[in-house]
Length: 600
Image 1 (cartoon, rainbow, N blue to C red):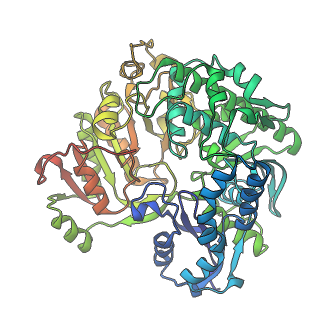
Image 2: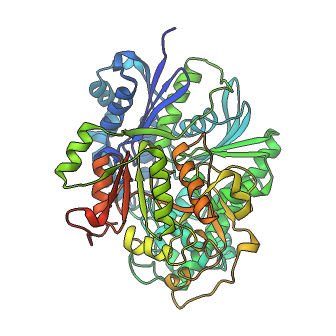
Image 3: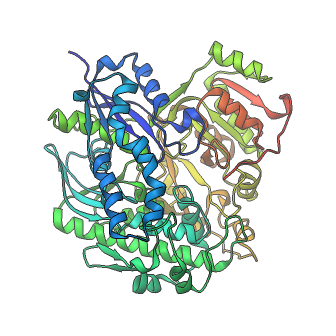
């Protein structure tokens, strides 16, 4: 039987990616930024596509369909219509956007055909939110589910929901631009001094330091929420329809403070603002979910879109019990649109019913770092690297012991994860029991804000000993409370960083100020090597929780290749690195330790 390959592509906005599906199974997926080393790279994903094809040892002649994750003509229509409706104020934004459309984005069909040497009849363009919906349903473990997609904006749609079963995806309702939960959250991201499309995580981490004292003000003036969870934004406070900006003076006047300047001191006021918009976001999502449950009668809910990466809201949704099961696409953002496009092309375009036997098996879908690879060895030696080689068992035991000794260990081996989370194959690990580790990792390793939390990885069978958790959480997509018996009283310092540095539990490096933790549970089937590390760590410490953060520094993508991993290791304060089956000790490397810092 001939293999049926479908290639999905997302590109030209941010986080371009490619994904390849074979007979309904996801065989390869990667973001372009991992190869180009440009954070959030929006360019056409030539490298990611090449990787996907080479992974399966095929050419474009073997690909049945190429599916793009949005309808570019419809999106261009929204930009032109918005400019006309807001003329003359919107002319500046229009003139800023139009060159890229005229020279590049409008001709994406021609670009794909030329870059991949395929004919137009092999190409398919589907709506943005349909890509998100397909990415959520088809890899899920459910035969039937309600689906909810939320992001900034696709073509016109900002939010959609519907039902999915063996016959396909039916989107019943949508919300349209400019009413957008993603854009609302991004507006507050800007107001609190962070960058759109990357700073949302920072504001989410900031929120627990504040109180939602402005939630009612937001609901009274900025966003009106209806009983079914739909909402309307008050355009008086926003400028994203007319300018290359998000908020305006009226927004600042409403709160009585100017927007925070990037890198300036974090005043408690902005933490309260972050807590307030997080509370409003939680309310909208929970209200929506309740309405969707009533309207569809489904037991399961699947989600995708950038807003689905809001781990606080997803944790509350999961805890609410509105649905028996809540499943979030691990690569929920625009990169995951490539995956959804490929899956839609296989199931819907080819009219193939979903098979329960092929849910997503792994997120380790990217570039593979091999053991004893001659090319990698040669390049590492050119960089002046020295290392020792070990078996898997030896590495697991050595990593566990180094963590117990208070060292940080970076791990880059096997296939890279697809999506924003490092889940053991491109990770920096540390001892979660170490009260000083949070500040050390933030300031000396990641070169980022000292108030930001770190996630725990824990043996799946032990998770309930540490967290109030209702089942596996393999993709680090929800927050769960640390168990009360493990908590210590929160001590507040004069600054957020001082507060962050205070221990709040017996696993202080992964306990946020509100006692929450973005948990990754690990089992042997999911990641045998990482599972072995945790087992060894438990054996020598009695604890099976470690810090797991992505192997990168601020402003750079997560490492991809062995060379990327070594270079990141050398310019950070990481003390040991495992790259493939090689163990690197920083003190033995030429150049020793670098003081280089990451960039925004």
